[in-house]
Length: 122
Image (cartoon, rainbow, N blue to C red; front, side, top):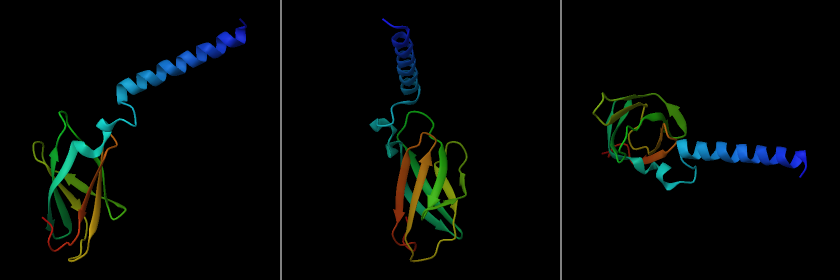
């Protein structure tokens, strides 16, 4: 066999090994375990200038919230102290308006929540 064939075979094997190692370390992108089911929003409380979400984790490990998005805009947020599950989002909400909230975890999973009427959030 030619030298070119063996060079291509070596490159192919290297790529397969690297992809397998990445999948082993990070999981495959189409895996259902990387879905947003690791965290759910159990309650929303409205405070002046803030939307406070109470979160429940369904994961065995620590789940970090990387970003918060309200109505397609990135917003500032503060997580509660360790052991709590409250997430305070700085947002000037308006009574009676609806809000689509998306939380992105550090694993890339998305947690979606909607407040249909800001006067009745809970």
